[in-house]
Amino acid sequence: MSRLIVISNRVSVPKAQGAAGAQGGLAVALTAALREHKGIWFGWSGKETETFTGHLDMQRRDGVTTATIDLEPQDIDEYYNGYANRTLWPLFHYRIDLTEYERHFGSGYERVNERFADAALPLIEPDDLVWVHDYHFLPLGSQLRAKGIKNRIGLFLHIPWPPTRLLVSLPYHERLVRSMLDYDLIGFQTEEWLESFLHYAEKELGAKVDADKTIHFEGRKVKAKAFPIGIDFEEFTTAAKGGLTADACDRLRASARGRKIVIGVDRLDYSKGLAERFDAYDRFLTDNPDMAKDIILLQIAPPSRELVASYQNIREELETKTGHINGAHADVAWVPIRYVNRGYPRAELAGFYRAADIGLVTPLRDGMNLVAKEYVAAQDPEDPGVLILSRFAGAALQLTDALLVNPHNTEQVSEAIGEALAMSKAERKRRWKAMFESVQREDVVKWREDFVAELFACGTVPGES
Ligand code: GDG
Figure 1 (cartoon, rainbow, N blue to C red):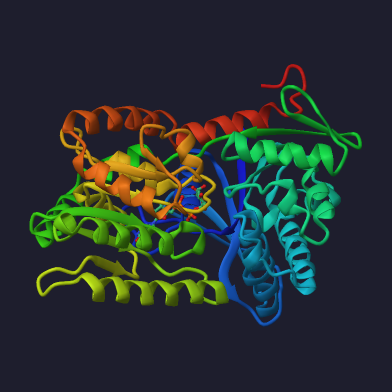
Figure 2: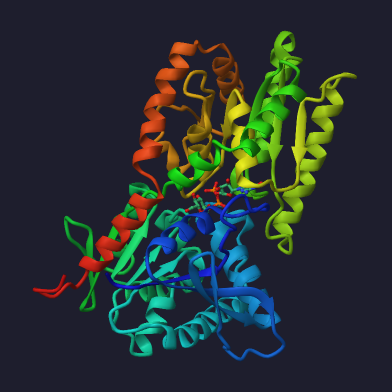
């Protein structure tokens, strides 16, 4: 079996059970992948250094070998807080209004990608499969090729790929996408993002695309395919059988005093549609005064990317909105929204999901969305809750038995809350069962195996196994 070299922005191996904090979906998925494969997980330590040295800090943690480098403050500003999170993230989530096009962000991004390529070189042995993750490293494959790496290199994009019409607003978009065509395999979360990428390759670059979605461009051959990511089903459901989960579930239920519980769990990010969600909940309370006091919304939203202004703004907006809604509707013994800006251990989170009658997952745009899948996995089979899911999350293509909504449509989301509260147990069970089977079947193990098998098959020479 080939070794895996995984490259992602942050290397973050969660503790075996229940690390607190905003453990992103990416980190959770990759740890599961690396525990089974031999290899190395390489990325940024999250630390600053005055002068970049490229020194690799190698460690073995929880069965995973990691290698990290420190970055200079200017690198962090331009690459991470700049191009990755002020340019690509908003643009790829269709938020052209929040996209900042600073020239020095782009050059910093390329410089840091080259630094990563240099630092990765000594880690890569001839038979290794190199698996690069996400929008931080779109040109990394091409940087590795320029330094003589001939291994199979794949990229998986965890976020959406935007329509060509939006992407062309990015200065030097062509240079960026051309650099991606040095990968052997590019994976997307859904067919929709894949189609957008192929459209760009054909229309803007004049590439040829085969029926099997292999792109031919200037003598290069790149396979593009959708690999919907899943949750670590085994780990999640096993952890959810423990005492911490049961305690969390009981605690939340007891505190709700018989009221119905609606839960939202999201990194505090404008793409997650939190402001629109609060508006829809407000509408529900206003339109249904008879039911209003029988429901609470628990929104867990650990802060993220706090140095980026748009994240500070959304945080302020949500604090104001929560204040208004609670001010308008609260009673001495009832507050409609519990808005919590902190993270919880995963096992506790599972208990909160289980206690909740409704999972409200309404991103405006989301590559996949693992919270929707975790909510389904955590339910009591005998009395499952209802998932309300944005049609703009990648997960909506798999979880078709959720109540699918347009998160911009306040009335529709409000009505979906009403429909979920009124849904019969038989209907809840029917919908949940179909979704549960999909979450179980299409888990992170399948995702990893499918991607690695496809990468291995790229350029396989006859007789190789
Ligand atoms: C990106 C893409 C794609 C959240 N709060 C706590 C906590 N979390 C965990 C959740 C979940 C993860 O963070 C979030 O994953 P998502 O998929 O919902 O979203 P992103 O972070 O934006 O992830 C996304 C994903 O990559 C994977 O490809 O699905 O579309 O945007 O696992 O449970 N975990 C803990 N405490 C919290 O308070 N422990």
